Image (cartoon, rainbow, N blue to C red; front, side, top):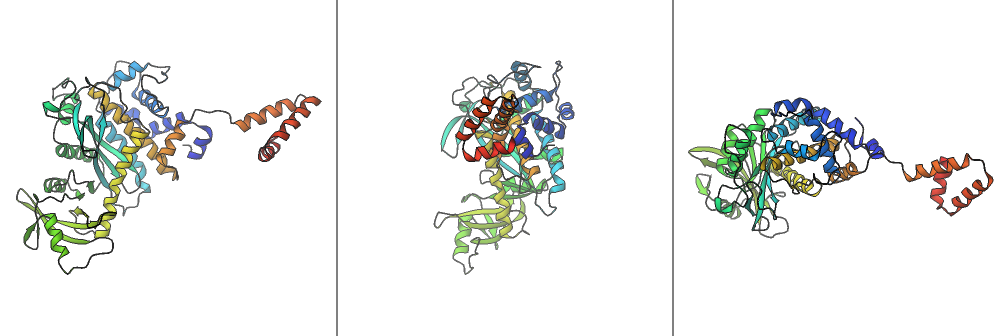
Length: 446
Protein backbone atom coordinates (compact mmCIF):
# COMPACT_ATOMS: atom_id res chain seq x y z
CA UNK A 1 0.00 0.00 0.00
CA UNK A 2 1.47 3.34 -1.01
CA UNK A 3 1.46 6.36 1.24
CA UNK A 4 -0.20 9.64 0.33
CA UNK A 5 3.22 11.20 -0.35
CA UNK A 6 4.02 8.56 -2.97
CA UNK A 7 0.55 8.83 -4.47
CA UNK A 8 0.91 12.59 -4.77
CA UNK A 9 4.26 12.19 -6.52
CA UNK A 10 3.17 9.48 -8.93
CA UNK A 11 -0.52 10.32 -9.31
CA UNK A 12 -1.25 6.60 -9.16
CA UNK A 13 -5.00 6.72 -8.70
CA UNK A 14 -5.69 3.36 -10.26
CA UNK A 15 -3.38 1.51 -7.88
CA UNK A 16 -5.04 3.16 -4.89
CA UNK A 17 -8.50 2.17 -6.11
CA UNK A 18 -7.28 -1.35 -6.75
CA UNK A 19 -5.84 -1.53 -3.22
CA UNK A 20 -9.14 -0.39 -1.74
CA UNK A 21 -11.11 -2.95 -3.76
CA UNK A 22 -8.73 -5.65 -2.55
CA UNK A 23 -8.85 -4.55 1.10
CA UNK A 24 -12.66 -4.65 1.31
CA UNK A 25 -12.79 -7.93 -0.61
CA UNK A 26 -15.35 -6.70 -3.12
CA UNK A 27 -14.99 -9.84 -5.22
CA UNK A 28 -16.23 -12.00 -2.35
CA UNK A 29 -18.90 -9.53 -1.27
CA UNK A 30 -20.47 -9.48 -4.74
CA UNK A 31 -21.60 -13.06 -4.18
CA UNK A 32 -23.52 -12.09 -1.05
CA UNK A 33 -25.56 -9.23 -2.54
CA UNK A 34 -27.35 -11.23 -5.24
CA UNK A 35 -25.15 -10.04 -8.11
CA UNK A 36 -26.25 -12.38 -10.89
CA UNK A 37 -25.22 -11.42 -14.39
CA UNK A 38 -24.84 -13.54 -17.51
CA UNK A 39 -22.00 -11.26 -18.58
CA UNK A 40 -18.39 -12.14 -17.74
CA UNK A 41 -17.75 -8.59 -16.46
CA UNK A 42 -17.23 -8.75 -12.65
CA UNK A 43 -18.67 -6.23 -10.22
CA UNK A 44 -15.15 -5.18 -9.21
CA UNK A 45 -14.50 -3.88 -12.74
CA UNK A 46 -17.77 -1.92 -12.74
CA UNK A 47 -17.12 -0.33 -9.33
CA UNK A 48 -13.52 0.48 -10.23
CA UNK A 49 -14.63 2.27 -13.41
CA UNK A 50 -17.29 4.20 -11.45
CA UNK A 51 -14.65 5.34 -8.94
CA UNK A 52 -12.49 6.62 -11.78
CA UNK A 53 -15.48 8.42 -13.33
CA UNK A 54 -16.23 10.10 -10.00
CA UNK A 55 -12.66 11.35 -9.60
CA UNK A 56 -12.62 12.59 -13.19
CA UNK A 57 -15.75 14.66 -12.37
CA UNK A 58 -17.67 13.38 -15.36
CA UNK A 59 -21.11 11.86 -15.76
CA UNK A 60 -21.72 8.32 -17.00
CA UNK A 61 -22.59 9.69 -20.43
CA UNK A 62 -19.43 11.78 -20.85
CA UNK A 63 -16.91 9.48 -19.19
CA UNK A 64 -14.25 7.69 -21.18
CA UNK A 65 -15.50 4.12 -21.78
CA UNK A 66 -13.62 1.13 -20.48
CA UNK A 67 -11.81 -1.26 -22.81
CA UNK A 68 -13.78 -4.16 -21.31
CA UNK A 69 -17.32 -2.78 -21.47
CA UNK A 70 -19.45 0.19 -22.49
CA UNK A 71 -21.27 2.71 -20.32
CA UNK A 72 -24.50 0.94 -21.23
CA UNK A 73 -23.25 -2.16 -19.41
CA UNK A 74 -22.66 -0.03 -16.32
CA UNK A 75 -26.15 1.45 -16.47
CA UNK A 76 -27.64 -2.03 -16.79
CA UNK A 77 -25.82 -3.13 -13.64
CA UNK A 78 -26.91 -0.02 -11.72
CA UNK A 79 -30.52 -0.48 -12.81
CA UNK A 80 -30.58 -4.16 -11.84
CA UNK A 81 -33.23 -4.38 -9.09
CA UNK A 82 -31.98 -7.77 -7.92
CA UNK A 83 -28.76 -6.37 -6.41
CA UNK A 84 -28.96 -5.55 -2.69
CA UNK A 85 -27.01 -2.29 -2.61
CA UNK A 86 -27.89 -1.55 1.03
CA UNK A 87 -26.35 -4.84 2.10
CA UNK A 88 -23.23 -4.09 0.05
CA UNK A 89 -22.67 -0.78 1.83
CA UNK A 90 -23.15 -2.44 5.24
CA UNK A 91 -20.67 -5.21 4.43
CA UNK A 92 -18.06 -2.77 3.09
CA UNK A 93 -18.34 -0.55 6.17
CA UNK A 94 -18.07 -3.55 8.49
CA UNK A 95 -14.87 -4.53 6.70
CA UNK A 96 -13.54 -1.00 7.11
CA UNK A 97 -14.38 -0.89 10.84
CA UNK A 98 -12.63 -4.24 11.34
CA UNK A 99 -9.51 -2.74 9.73
CA UNK A 100 -9.68 0.35 11.95
CA UNK A 101 -10.52 -1.52 15.19
CA UNK A 102 -6.87 -2.18 16.20
CA UNK A 103 -6.22 1.58 16.03
CA UNK A 104 -9.28 2.57 18.10
CA UNK A 105 -8.95 3.25 21.83
CA UNK A 106 -11.21 0.85 23.72
CA UNK A 107 -12.47 3.77 25.81
CA UNK A 108 -13.98 5.41 22.71
CA UNK A 109 -17.77 5.49 22.58
CA UNK A 110 -18.82 4.01 19.24
CA UNK A 111 -21.94 5.63 17.83
CA UNK A 112 -24.34 5.51 14.92
CA UNK A 113 -25.41 8.85 13.44
CA UNK A 114 -28.77 9.43 11.75
CA UNK A 115 -29.69 12.24 9.39
CA UNK A 116 -31.06 12.92 5.92
CA UNK A 117 -30.38 15.36 3.12
CA UNK A 118 -32.44 16.63 0.21
CA UNK A 119 -31.46 15.40 -3.25
CA UNK A 120 -33.08 17.82 -5.69
CA UNK A 121 -34.12 16.94 -9.22
CA UNK A 122 -36.00 20.07 -10.29
CA UNK A 123 -36.10 19.27 -14.01
CA UNK A 124 -37.21 15.64 -13.83
CA UNK A 125 -40.80 14.70 -14.61
CA UNK A 126 -40.75 10.97 -15.34
CA UNK A 127 -38.25 9.75 -12.75
CA UNK A 128 -39.62 6.86 -10.73
CA UNK A 129 -41.09 7.77 -7.30
CA UNK A 130 -39.99 11.41 -7.64
CA UNK A 131 -41.87 13.50 -5.08
CA UNK A 132 -42.45 16.98 -3.71
CA UNK A 133 -40.31 17.05 -0.56
CA UNK A 134 -40.46 19.75 2.11
CA UNK A 135 -37.09 21.41 2.66
CA UNK A 136 -36.80 22.32 6.36
CA UNK A 137 -33.80 24.58 5.74
CA UNK A 138 -35.39 26.78 3.08
CA UNK A 139 -38.97 26.19 4.30
CA UNK A 140 -40.38 25.31 0.91
CA UNK A 141 -41.24 22.28 -1.21
CA UNK A 142 -38.68 20.96 -3.70
CA UNK A 143 -38.78 18.16 -6.26
CA UNK A 144 -36.52 15.25 -5.39
CA UNK A 145 -35.88 12.66 -2.69
CA UNK A 146 -34.61 12.51 0.86
CA UNK A 147 -31.40 10.53 1.25
CA UNK A 148 -31.73 8.94 4.69
CA UNK A 149 -28.30 7.84 5.92
CA UNK A 150 -27.01 5.88 8.90
CA UNK A 151 -23.32 6.46 9.67
CA UNK A 152 -20.75 5.13 12.13
CA UNK A 153 -18.14 7.09 14.04
CA UNK A 154 -15.61 6.58 16.81
CA UNK A 155 -14.95 10.30 17.02
CA UNK A 156 -12.51 10.55 14.12
CA UNK A 157 -13.76 9.13 10.80
CA UNK A 158 -17.34 9.07 9.63
CA UNK A 159 -18.28 5.95 7.70
CA UNK A 160 -21.69 5.66 5.97
CA UNK A 161 -23.28 2.35 6.99
CA UNK A 162 -26.74 2.16 5.46
CA UNK A 163 -29.11 4.30 3.42
CA UNK A 164 -32.60 4.60 2.00
CA UNK A 165 -33.82 6.88 -0.78
CA UNK A 166 -37.07 8.19 0.64
CA UNK A 167 -40.06 9.27 -1.44
CA UNK A 168 -43.67 9.89 -0.31
CA UNK A 169 -46.81 7.88 0.25
CA UNK A 170 -49.18 10.73 -0.59
CA UNK A 171 -50.42 10.56 -4.16
CA UNK A 172 -50.80 14.33 -4.27
CA UNK A 173 -47.06 14.79 -3.62
CA UNK A 174 -45.94 12.17 -6.15
CA UNK A 175 -44.44 13.88 -9.21
CA UNK A 176 -42.75 11.05 -11.09
CA UNK A 177 -44.04 7.69 -12.24
CA UNK A 178 -45.39 5.12 -9.82
CA UNK A 179 -43.41 2.19 -8.52
CA UNK A 180 -42.45 -0.20 -11.32
CA UNK A 181 -42.85 -3.22 -9.03
CA UNK A 182 -44.77 -3.94 -5.82
CA UNK A 183 -43.78 -7.57 -5.33
CA UNK A 184 -42.59 -7.74 -1.71
CA UNK A 185 -40.77 -11.00 -2.39
CA UNK A 186 -38.16 -9.17 -4.44
CA UNK A 187 -35.41 -6.80 -3.29
CA UNK A 188 -36.68 -4.11 -5.68
CA UNK A 189 -40.23 -4.32 -4.28
CA UNK A 190 -39.04 -4.16 -0.66
CA UNK A 191 -36.81 -1.19 -1.47
CA UNK A 192 -39.69 0.78 -3.01
CA UNK A 193 -42.05 -0.09 -0.18
CA UNK A 194 -39.48 1.14 2.31
CA UNK A 195 -39.19 4.45 0.44
CA UNK A 196 -42.87 5.21 1.02
CA UNK A 197 -43.04 4.48 4.76
CA UNK A 198 -42.57 6.89 7.65
CA UNK A 199 -39.04 8.13 8.17
CA UNK A 200 -38.77 7.09 11.84
CA UNK A 201 -39.85 3.53 11.01
CA UNK A 202 -37.24 3.28 8.27
CA UNK A 203 -34.55 4.59 10.64
CA UNK A 204 -35.21 1.68 12.99
CA UNK A 205 -35.18 -0.78 10.07
CA UNK A 206 -31.81 0.49 8.81
CA UNK A 207 -30.29 0.37 12.30
CA UNK A 208 -31.58 -3.19 12.89
CA UNK A 209 -30.17 -4.26 9.53
CA UNK A 210 -26.77 -2.74 10.35
CA UNK A 211 -26.67 -4.42 13.77
CA UNK A 212 -27.63 -7.78 12.28
CA UNK A 213 -24.75 -7.54 9.82
CA UNK A 214 -22.32 -6.92 12.67
CA UNK A 215 -21.93 -3.14 13.08
CA UNK A 216 -20.73 -2.36 16.62
CA UNK A 217 -22.15 0.69 18.44
CA UNK A 218 -23.55 1.72 21.81
CA UNK A 219 -25.11 5.09 21.02
CA UNK A 220 -27.29 6.64 18.33
CA UNK A 221 -27.04 10.38 17.59
CA UNK A 222 -29.80 12.33 15.86
CA UNK A 223 -31.35 15.78 15.80
CA UNK A 224 -34.76 16.99 16.95
CA UNK A 225 -36.47 15.83 13.74
CA UNK A 226 -36.26 12.19 14.91
CA UNK A 227 -36.41 12.68 18.68
CA UNK A 228 -39.46 11.37 20.54
CA UNK A 229 -40.11 9.10 23.54
CA UNK A 230 -41.10 6.37 21.06
CA UNK A 231 -37.71 6.53 19.28
CA UNK A 232 -35.83 6.58 22.59
CA UNK A 233 -37.71 3.53 23.86
CA UNK A 234 -37.41 1.47 20.68
CA UNK A 235 -33.68 2.11 20.44
CA UNK A 236 -33.37 1.15 24.09
CA UNK A 237 -34.94 -2.20 23.22
CA UNK A 238 -32.19 -2.70 20.63
CA UNK A 239 -29.57 -2.16 23.32
CA UNK A 240 -28.67 1.35 22.16
CA UNK A 241 -28.67 4.60 24.10
CA UNK A 242 -29.91 7.73 22.34
CA UNK A 243 -28.23 11.13 22.29
CA UNK A 244 -30.53 13.66 20.67
CA UNK A 245 -31.70 17.23 20.62
CA UNK A 246 -35.21 17.60 22.02
CA UNK A 247 -37.99 19.63 20.50
CA UNK A 248 -39.22 22.47 22.68
CA UNK A 249 -42.77 21.26 22.29
CA UNK A 250 -45.64 21.67 24.70
CA UNK A 251 -47.23 18.40 23.49
CA UNK A 252 -44.68 16.09 25.14
CA UNK A 253 -44.29 15.99 28.91
CA UNK A 254 -41.50 14.65 31.10
CA UNK A 255 -41.79 13.95 34.81
CA UNK A 256 -39.47 15.85 37.12
CA UNK A 257 -39.76 15.39 40.89
CA UNK A 258 -43.21 13.89 40.61
CA UNK A 259 -44.71 16.51 38.30
CA UNK A 260 -45.15 16.58 34.52
CA UNK A 261 -43.40 19.38 32.63
CA UNK A 262 -42.93 20.26 29.01
CA UNK A 263 -39.37 21.17 28.03
CA UNK A 264 -40.22 24.87 28.13
CA UNK A 265 -41.89 24.57 31.51
CA UNK A 266 -38.98 22.56 32.88
CA UNK A 267 -36.52 25.22 31.78
CA UNK A 268 -38.57 27.95 33.47
CA UNK A 269 -38.73 25.81 36.62
CA UNK A 270 -34.94 25.47 36.70
CA UNK A 271 -34.44 29.12 35.74
CA UNK A 272 -36.48 30.39 38.69
CA UNK A 273 -34.90 27.98 41.13
CA UNK A 274 -31.79 28.77 43.15
CA UNK A 275 -29.69 26.31 41.19
CA UNK A 276 -26.60 28.05 39.73
CA UNK A 277 -25.87 27.73 36.03
CA UNK A 278 -22.85 25.72 34.90
CA UNK A 279 -19.89 27.14 32.97
CA UNK A 280 -20.27 24.90 29.90
CA UNK A 281 -24.03 24.42 30.14
CA UNK A 282 -27.03 26.06 31.79
CA UNK A 283 -28.79 23.26 33.66
CA UNK A 284 -28.81 19.48 33.85
CA UNK A 285 -31.43 17.22 35.43
CA UNK A 286 -32.75 13.66 35.29
CA UNK A 287 -36.34 13.29 34.10
CA UNK A 288 -38.64 10.37 33.35
CA UNK A 289 -40.06 9.76 29.89
CA UNK A 290 -43.03 7.54 29.03
CA UNK A 291 -44.13 5.57 25.97
CA UNK A 292 -47.15 3.24 25.98
CA UNK A 293 -46.90 2.67 29.71
CA UNK A 294 -43.13 2.14 29.69
CA UNK A 295 -41.22 4.57 31.92
CA UNK A 296 -37.47 5.15 31.58
CA UNK A 297 -35.03 7.80 32.88
CA UNK A 298 -33.30 10.42 30.72
CA UNK A 299 -30.70 13.04 31.48
CA UNK A 300 -31.59 16.44 30.01
CA UNK A 301 -28.96 19.14 29.46
CA UNK A 302 -29.82 22.76 28.64
CA UNK A 303 -27.08 24.46 26.60
CA UNK A 304 -26.87 28.15 25.72
CA UNK A 305 -27.28 28.85 22.01
CA UNK A 306 -24.23 30.74 20.78
CA UNK A 307 -24.88 34.10 19.21
CA UNK A 308 -28.52 34.25 20.34
CA UNK A 309 -29.34 35.83 23.70
CA UNK A 310 -31.85 34.12 26.00
CA UNK A 311 -32.03 31.08 23.70
CA UNK A 312 -31.08 27.52 24.56
CA UNK A 313 -30.74 24.05 23.10
CA UNK A 314 -31.84 20.87 24.85
CA UNK A 315 -29.86 17.61 24.68
CA UNK A 316 -31.14 14.31 26.04
CA UNK A 317 -29.44 10.99 26.77
CA UNK A 318 -31.02 7.73 27.95
CA UNK A 319 -27.79 6.77 29.76
CA UNK A 320 -27.89 8.87 32.93
CA UNK A 321 -24.34 7.89 34.01
CA UNK A 322 -22.63 10.29 31.61
CA UNK A 323 -21.82 13.83 32.74
CA UNK A 324 -23.27 16.86 30.92
CA UNK A 325 -19.82 17.61 29.45
CA UNK A 326 -19.60 14.06 28.06
CA UNK A 327 -23.09 14.36 26.60
CA UNK A 328 -22.22 17.62 24.83
CA UNK A 329 -18.96 16.17 23.52
CA UNK A 330 -20.69 13.00 22.30
CA UNK A 331 -23.46 14.90 20.51
CA UNK A 332 -20.91 17.13 18.76
CA UNK A 333 -19.98 14.10 16.62
CA UNK A 334 -23.31 14.40 14.83
CA UNK A 335 -21.82 17.21 12.75
CA UNK A 336 -19.62 14.67 10.93
CA UNK A 337 -22.63 13.45 8.93
CA UNK A 338 -23.23 17.02 7.75
CA UNK A 339 -19.62 17.07 6.56
CA UNK A 340 -20.27 13.83 4.70
CA UNK A 341 -23.30 15.28 2.91
CA UNK A 342 -21.39 18.42 1.93
CA UNK A 343 -18.38 16.47 0.66
CA UNK A 344 -20.56 14.01 -1.25
CA UNK A 345 -22.50 16.79 -2.96
CA UNK A 346 -19.59 19.13 -3.62
CA UNK A 347 -17.01 16.60 -4.79
CA UNK A 348 -18.64 13.20 -5.41
CA UNK A 349 -21.70 14.27 -7.46
CA UNK A 350 -24.24 12.93 -4.97
CA UNK A 351 -27.03 15.09 -6.37
CA UNK A 352 -25.96 14.96 -10.04
CA UNK A 353 -27.60 11.69 -11.05
CA UNK A 354 -29.13 11.43 -14.52
CA UNK A 355 -30.55 7.94 -13.97
CA UNK A 356 -34.33 7.65 -14.24
CA UNK A 357 -34.95 4.32 -12.48
CA UNK A 358 -35.25 4.16 -8.72
CA UNK A 359 -32.88 1.17 -8.43
CA UNK A 360 -30.23 2.98 -10.45
CA UNK A 361 -30.34 6.01 -8.17
CA UNK A 362 -29.98 3.87 -5.04
CA UNK A 363 -27.02 2.12 -6.69
CA UNK A 364 -25.32 5.40 -7.59
CA UNK A 365 -25.75 6.77 -4.06
CA UNK A 366 -24.23 3.56 -2.71
CA UNK A 367 -21.21 3.93 -5.01
CA UNK A 368 -20.88 7.55 -3.87
CA UNK A 369 -20.85 6.38 -0.23
CA UNK A 370 -18.20 3.79 -1.07
CA UNK A 371 -16.08 6.47 -2.75
CA UNK A 372 -16.30 8.50 0.45
CA UNK A 373 -15.19 5.39 2.37
CA UNK A 374 -12.10 5.23 0.15
CA UNK A 375 -11.20 8.84 0.98
CA UNK A 376 -11.91 8.33 4.71
CA UNK A 377 -9.76 5.20 4.65
CA UNK A 378 -6.82 7.12 3.20
CA UNK A 379 -7.28 10.05 5.58
CA UNK A 380 -7.31 7.73 8.61
CA UNK A 381 -4.50 5.33 7.69
CA UNK A 382 -2.04 8.02 6.62
CA UNK A 383 -2.86 10.40 9.49
CA UNK A 384 -2.65 13.21 6.96
CA UNK A 385 -3.56 16.84 7.59
CA UNK A 386 -5.32 17.07 4.25
CA UNK A 387 -9.09 17.38 4.23
CA UNK A 388 -11.31 15.04 2.26
CA UNK A 389 -11.61 17.73 -0.37
CA UNK A 390 -7.83 17.88 -0.74
CA UNK A 391 -7.70 14.11 -1.09
CA UNK A 392 -10.40 14.26 -3.78
CA UNK A 393 -8.45 16.74 -5.88
CA UNK A 394 -5.35 14.62 -5.36
CA UNK A 395 -7.24 11.63 -6.78
CA UNK A 396 -8.54 13.87 -9.56
CA UNK A 397 -5.03 14.55 -10.87
CA UNK A 398 -4.05 12.94 -14.11
CA UNK A 399 -2.12 9.67 -14.22
CA UNK A 400 1.73 9.64 -14.27
CA UNK A 401 3.26 12.54 -16.17
CA UNK A 402 6.71 14.07 -16.40
CA UNK A 403 7.29 17.17 -14.31
CA UNK A 404 8.48 20.37 -15.99
CA UNK A 405 11.82 20.41 -14.19
CA UNK A 406 12.44 16.75 -15.05
CA UNK A 407 11.68 17.40 -18.74
CA UNK A 408 13.94 20.44 -18.77
CA UNK A 409 16.83 18.54 -17.19
CA UNK A 410 16.37 15.74 -19.72
CA UNK A 411 16.46 18.27 -22.58
CA UNK A 412 19.65 19.91 -21.30
CA UNK A 413 21.41 16.57 -20.86
CA UNK A 414 20.44 15.58 -24.39
CA UNK A 415 21.80 18.80 -25.85
CA UNK A 416 25.03 18.56 -23.88
CA UNK A 417 25.66 15.05 -25.17
CA UNK A 418 26.03 16.46 -28.72
CA UNK A 419 29.36 18.11 -27.83
CA UNK A 420 28.81 21.07 -30.08
CA UNK A 421 30.20 24.45 -29.10
CA UNK A 422 27.27 26.57 -30.23
CA UNK A 423 24.86 24.33 -28.29
CA UNK A 424 26.85 24.92 -25.10
CA UNK A 425 26.77 28.63 -25.77
CA UNK A 426 23.01 28.52 -26.38
CA UNK A 427 22.46 26.61 -23.14
CA UNK A 428 24.52 29.11 -21.16
CA UNK A 429 22.56 32.02 -22.63
CA UNK A 430 19.29 30.24 -21.86
CA UNK A 431 20.41 29.57 -18.28
CA UNK A 432 21.32 33.21 -17.81
CA UNK A 433 17.74 34.30 -18.56
CA UNK A 434 16.24 31.91 -15.98
CA UNK A 435 15.42 32.98 -12.40
CA UNK A 436 18.21 32.41 -9.90
CA UNK A 437 16.35 29.68 -7.96
CA UNK A 438 15.65 27.74 -11.17
CA UNK A 439 19.33 28.04 -12.18
CA UNK A 440 20.37 26.59 -8.83
CA UNK A 441 18.02 23.58 -9.22
CA UNK A 442 19.14 22.90 -12.81
CA UNK A 443 22.84 23.20 -12.04
CA UNK A 444 22.49 20.77 -9.15
CA UNK A 445 20.53 18.32 -11.33
CA UNK A 446 22.86 18.52 -14.31
